[in-house]
Image (cartoon, helix red, strand yellow):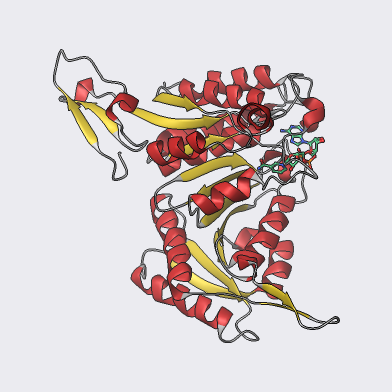
Length: 375
Ligand code: NAD
């Protein structure tokens, strides 16, 4: 239940301490000495973000708290508002908070155009070494798409490959970019994919590559995946696909695939392809996972034109919250949140404008929260 966190036992009659005052990380728990008195509280950093972010964050908190699980939210502002007040969209206190809690839920943050600020999202990824980008793509009744039975999990390596940014010009008419693939990073991402499969009842991992052409770099990625796969033999099936064939297969018969593990560039492309298979980015949740911290966020941006109007769809951030529950080991609560979102969308009575409904952000969240309550 505590996913390797520190456990604090509270004797009968003793008051349950706030995890933050104990300096606990998110996965740390405060547990009663007797099972019937068990209380678990998770410290989580909450970054409301810009534009529609704060409304979506409120909606997500309401749904997560309806699970009956206790959270100690560390609310940390970042983004446009802190540029004026603190001179940066990502103050150190935000990163310190995530380092302390180990887990963050983040609303979208506007990337200022034309100023020198780096994207907060990219900065968080780098500073916290969030090596895995994880995006589920699952068909939902009530969300228009070409398929009805897609259930994919895309696990993308986030730190190397052509995204290492090592490029240079070779004279006026040529340029080179260096592709970095290491055994360490490739095994780490493969292990994440297999562990996720084991913990969440997924049956197959497919490694995606172009090792027929890039025999050294993609060859090393594939070899690393094969080595990790051998450790899970008999528990999780393994296969590999060449990336171009993978694209065709996903368009023709996506239902044949389960968990995909990919190096950075192919992962970037195929995670959008997969989102397209299930109705687009509007309902797509995401996670960035590191050894010591994880940040959960919707794939969409801050949609400033809808800010403050109780109009935006909170589905993607709520489902990101469900991913967070899985990450901290609260699998049953995660299942409840996902089922509730799916049920409310399928019913179609309380959906937001983008799904053809007339409900607001709050009304949708209330409808989901009602179905999430423990029975
Ligand atoms: P966007 O995703 O914010 O909006 C595109 C369009 O999608 C919107 O106009 C709206 O019609 C729709 N939309 C998006 N989210 C929605 C929701 N939850 N409910 C209903 N409709 C929704 O993309 P953009 O306009 O390209 O970017 C706006 C800002 O967001 C930019 O500053 C960009 O840098 C930033 N951004 C942040 C993140 C992040 O923080 N992870 C991701 C992408 C973009």
